[in-house]
Length: 304
Image (cartoon, rainbow, N blue to C red; front, side, top):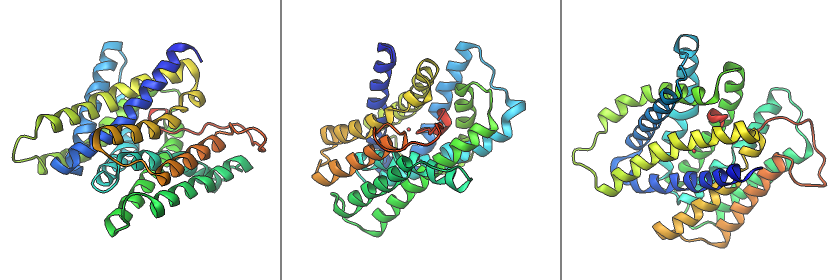
């Protein structure tokens, strides 16, 4: 990988890691629905502006139905679940659970008849051991709400994995940046009533407004543009190595800016999930591999 790709990978790790921090700031004030809606609205606007500057058409007539369908599973559902989890879980936990997407991709591929290699199955088992470590020995007390947050994040990861297959089937030959923008718009439409209904009675503080802007414009819109540039220059397999960086930066930002504790359980659980991702991508030497197949960490963008 050239230096430009490496720099963009580090920036993406920092940006997507910060997205969980911004949700932890905004959700307690404006709610999960408003946070998810504003993130998507601002992200969609950013991507539309980028496409307009690049003079790329959205191809609405050909793909509007897929934008609505895939947009729901790719953005509406997971963004709402991530925002809900921000009520109860530290930023680092949310990022680690988001990194389980490749595990669900392997499970769905297996159910569809694709035979997974030993390395990928080991990755699935190690990954869920990491999730168990966080849930059982982490810094949060296990309550009903915390349990629902864990389950919601796993459902969000499953939704991303499902979307990865849907994108491959429904958007063959379409520019991935156009796919991202279309699905973002399609996923935003169901949340517009939520945004209107949950609109705060009082103007939020500057910190909350800044968090929403950063979450939508930088962590969603601009981040996807950087990610797609890496996909074009380095290929999807190398581009998704950002999966290793996001939880690390999320743990760091949470500790620095929110005072979230970094314990042995969070470090060990995060480490297990990262090892699992390496196993699923078949990057660990000495373990039998299967046929090469793309496993995407952020489906709509090739794949936050």
